[in-house]
Amino acid sequence: MEDGTSESLGYCGDTDADYDVLQWDTREDCEVRQILDRVADKWSLLVIALLDRRSLRFTELRRMIDGISQRMLTRTLRHLERDGLISRTVHPTIPPRVDYELTSLGATLHSTIRALVTWTETHQNEIAAARTAYDARMLAEQQAAEAEAAERAEIARSALR
Amino acid sequence: MEDGTSESLGYCGDTDADYDVLQWDTREDCEVRQILDRVADKWSLLVIALLDRRSLRFTELRRMIDGISQRMLTRTLRHLERDGLISRTVHPTIPPRVDYELTSLGATLHSTIRALVTWTETHQNEIAAARTAYDARMLAEQQAAEAEAAERAEIARSALR
DNA sequence: CCGCATCCTCCAGGATACTG
DNA sequence: CAGTATCCTGGAGGATGCGG
Image (tube, rainbow over all chains, first blue to last red; front, side):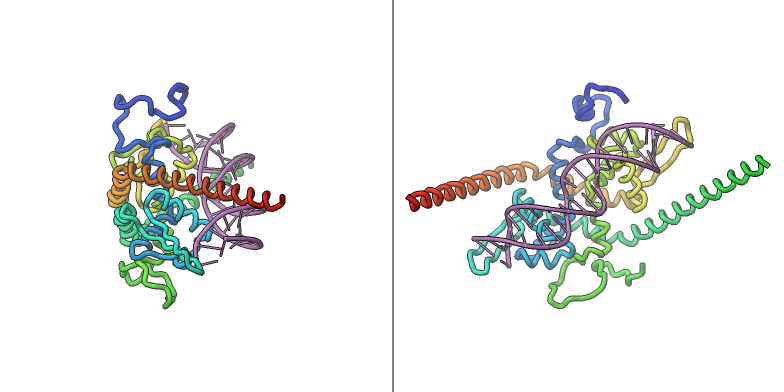
């Protein structure tokens, strides 16, 4: 595994060459990777999905998203705002009121997000089935392995007699 | 298991009248939320995207995905296999060879993933621009705040004289 | 080559308390 | 109400070594 030279950034140095062309740059420092990591965040997904329907206040979001802490909601909203996906509007009233809504950029993302959610909803039964099947298979294998181990142990014992 | 097979949304339990109608259940224990968290994993996204082209061996994947540790790759592959999204084929050769490929279920997911990637590629410039704009705005605000603080400090000092 | 087990680090993220 | 600041912990995830 020693190549030493182009090690730090993977095989990024060579472009076309022997390696087959990927759909996108899979390097860590790749722009798309960074954005994808942000967009693929579970809280972000939820916020974007919720804001698609109408603008929402901070507390509304907090109540709607079960399990999110105030800290994480703040951070998520800040990130999304920084990326230009949502806008933040402060109403200088008392008590203060802050509205969040999707920007047009955010709205374009939502349809994609929505597709992901739809896919999940559509296939959740298949996934559940696959999981139980997998677990059963693993359990069976493990038991088989244990049985075999017991078998060998028995043979060893009888050999000593 | 049986939830009436109504695919309208992943509904999990109690109803709160004050809660407005969501597109989907946002509670933590909701099935869809769980799956989404898995699917939204950055490594999973990469693996699925890469496997769409052709089946790949363990080491191929590891080399292609910059920054992934062997441990995380193994875990990711196991998760995806458990969810029925990829299949794992062991060739009992020496040295051993293990091929991973998308299942048909995984293939359906890929198109959605692909849409997400495409969106990211398409809008990465807008996002980059939004970020620099945001950072500039924040910097300006911070400097304004500092200036104001200095102002008040000066006033306080002169008041003491 | 594939991958599990072990150890260890580090930081995402929750809980809490305080402000404007 | 809508945050910010602080502390603290669990678990994600990297490094290493062994085993089939």
